Amino acid sequence: MKQRFLFIFLVLIAVNTSQAQGKTTRIGYIDMEYILENVSDYKEAKSQLELKAQKWKQEIEAKKLNINTLKENLKTEKALLTKELIDERETEIKFQENEMLEYQQKQFGADGNLMRQKSALAKPIQDQVFTAVQDIAEAKNYDFIFDKSSDLTMLFSNKRFDISDQVLRVLNRTEKREQLTKKQLKDQEAKESKENAIDENPAMADRQKALDEKKSAREKLIEDRRLEQEAKKKEYDDRRKAIQAEREAKKNGTVSEPAKTTEAAKTTEATKTGETAKPAATTTDPAATEPAVDKAAERQKLYEQRKKELEERRKKILEEREAAKKAKEAETQKTNTTNN
Image (cartoon, rainbow, N blue to C red):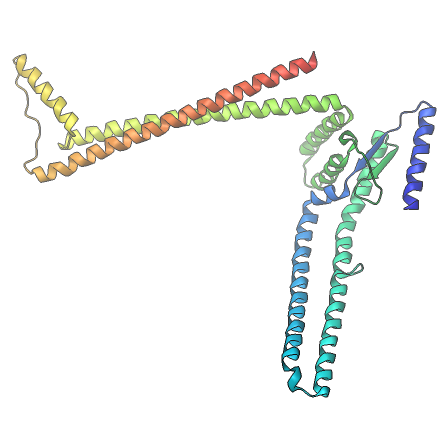
């Protein structure tokens, strides 16, 4: 505790001295726990360690259950046992209790397997983090960089001084550079330069955030249009299939009642104009006609149902599109207000 306050005191003295000399002091901090949780290798190894710890806990619970069983048996049979047997069983129970406590301390104690393996797991990544912090501090002229998750108590920390994401990018870049070609490496360096510029300028970071939001809204609008086009195409295909099915039904003589009515109207019109109408194809078996009529009616019903579903889907897409448009307009208005 004394060392912590001494360290804070020295930092404050250094900051005041720098300000007195007219020099701007740059201070940043990292969150080591946040960084570790976002490193894929650490997360995978930590999951395996947690499985080990769970197995150790199960073994301890099994030992406890066995000890409790021995105690219950002794309590039940105590009246029937001699003093020597009672002492022998109590000694056995005590031995197993001590053994269980030693095992628990060995696995979960302050210097147990869990803590040692956690430390060994985090150390290589912590070394990389320290190297990345030094590189960032030298490149961007930081005077102090703290670790938020350490013993140093930070009563307040402004998010804009948090360089944890910058450290993560450095770690990821180091890992990716080994797998990149020259062209990809050049593109990566350009991207890194842009990210560094954004980190240095909070106003640019806000502007980049607004651009990213606009890009997301634009991509959503494009996706909505694509869905709308797919819905229209599906509706057209369904209509075409229904018309083709109706033509096939007419060709086979298994037309629905509306089609028969239309055919009868055509025949009447031909009779009025003095033309001889060709007899419509009919089937000699009424029982064979009825199933065909039912199938045509079922197809018509299915077509109507699909048409209704497509209409509802198109309506929903249009509503989402309108909502995205309003959100985009609101964002544009907000950006203009901020710029003004």
